[in-house]
Length: 306
Ligand SMILES: Cc1cc2nc3c(=O)[nH]c(=O)nc-3n(C[C@H](O)[C@H](O)[C@H](O)COP(=O)(O)OP(=O)(O)OC[C@H]3O[C@@H](n4cnc5c(N)ncnc54)[C@H](O)[C@@H]3O)c2cc1C
Image (cartoon, rainbow, N blue to C red; front, side, top):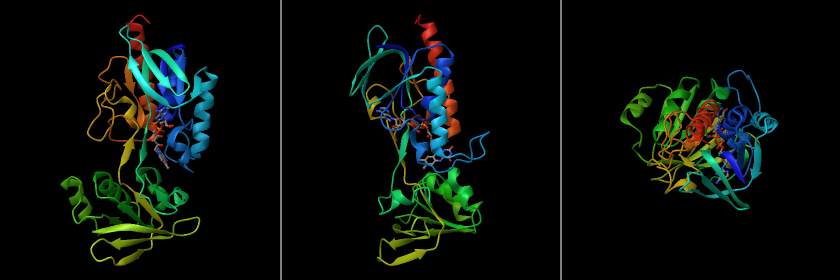
């Protein structure tokens, strides 16, 4: 079956792209392997989307999906397993249930946060364990929190949280940060940040809600309890781009190389949302990318007589 535009991934970026493409009169197939709505469905509360003071991630995702389907976007629950471009310029998208073709493609497959792998980490996510300081920091204003990680994101998260929270512990398994020196210097200058080096978070405490963490010294094995209301895990993200390796250029961390215009190196393929190279990965930026990618895909189709 041929569609003007196939969108792979139905998170905020993919759903927004489908809304814009349908409103431009294009036929749209939106393929999602797991959750229509993407990663935000795991968030109990979103309070930073402009115009919506407070909403659960599920309700946010539901209303995006309802809007896209009401506009006529066709949805398919399937994992995309392969993508290729034919000599006539059309794209073939392979799924576990069959192939589809399109004149343009939008890659909106997102990314997932690397976990610490601790017991009850999943259960406490959204109840004290967070992977996004920018999203959830404000919920812990005036309280003591910890950040796990030693890269730029961890340092920037700790600096951001130090402006909101009473005390911030940054727990890193080595004695040196991997972050840029500028970020490390900024961190070290803050009076309410304590560096807990050569240490790993080894236990999450609390029933139903996080009440603290235990950290273990990697050199001595000594265990220290930190009474924190939240643990922000910043140990990296894994972009869902295996599908595109060989076809699209990926950066050193695996993100699709594309600028604010969402154009990739392959004409007719656009990358939107957390999956592309960018500095802020949020709902607002995913929605913005979806709008830009759909508009660019429509222009591409027009310019190529499709
Ligand atoms: C717990 C949590 C809380 C958050 N809270 C906030 C917040 O309060 N405010 C905020 O602005 N941001 C928040 N974020 C970040 C926000 O959710 C992301 O920035 C946003 O969802 C990115 O949207 P996206 O569409 O680019 O990617 P995603 O939401 O990751 O969607 C990508 C979709 O692609 C699908 N997919 C991947 N590979 C394939 C494939 N091969 N075939 C088919 N489908 C595929 C995935 O299943 C997924 O549904 C939070 C994130 C998490 C995890």
